[in-house]
Image (cartoon, rainbow, N blue to C red; front, side):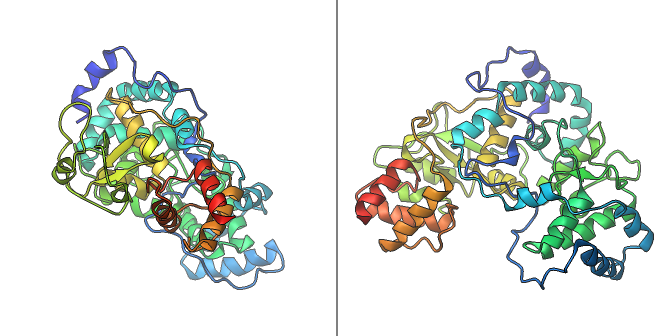
Length: 428
């Protein structure tokens, strides 16, 4: 869909998203809720019950070496990988931090879909036209979104982390809070080294072990990385990014990407819209939503199945219809803000429309402490959020909607300072 129009698009004046400001490389690393995003992994990480932590990092290494060898890692590979590995305090600090302050989704998008990021994406689309022209039909994945993931994950390769992956995963494995998951990633990383895809000194990434241009964790690397260059190695760190771009396309394809199909479309809601339908669970066809009065600014709502209505800033912000491809992006990073950023960065790289609706920029996002207060107060009022953790997930949003209904408010599930004020009044 993208490549056939690329020469014309790249020659046109750039106007898309002119209001957005610049941002630093790797913008996907922090989400609007203040949490570090999930790394690309096909299933959620569940809590693990782990044995007591060894008395020292050195003792842990002795124990883990036996596990690694039992898993098929050769002594030579293990010993080379762990040469000079030590406990990394930076990794421990980043793993345990609990950010207090947050960014609103529009602030995140301003940064993630900046004019400079769009311009770089368009330039690279032109420079890599031949490569993308091979990858797109091979995996049936639209190239603009592969480029967008590259731009968000590492600033198009300008910053994919500098911490040795073996050291970061060993640190997390020893720390014990997520030791089972970290040990699984560490064994996978050792298998990558044993396969000869990369050397230990070049296997660097984020503090959480995400690697290369498009930030694959080791288990995802083993499952989805491809040797597209044909040199016998799956090199996601190579300056040409050939294997990384192909691997990202393969990842999306494996989770059901539909080429030439929409990802997300901004929509206008009719008067009297039932906001309970915009709950990230209710699905309709495009025709069924259109029959309820949902429309786009120009033309008809693109056809499709399993569309959901998304209101990331509630009734006072833009509304979107999300398509199955949107959920595929969320398999890469399960954050609505990230998926919107990938979608609209891809759209901008391809020269298509930006978000037209206005964000409620006067709203102040809640801090983590305020979200915990909100959850506790809602639960005390009988609207159980199923936990008080400062993370507003489906259970908390369902509780918010029930509260809003009971108070005669628009049940859009949107968490804001005005909502917290209403809950405080009801709780006093």
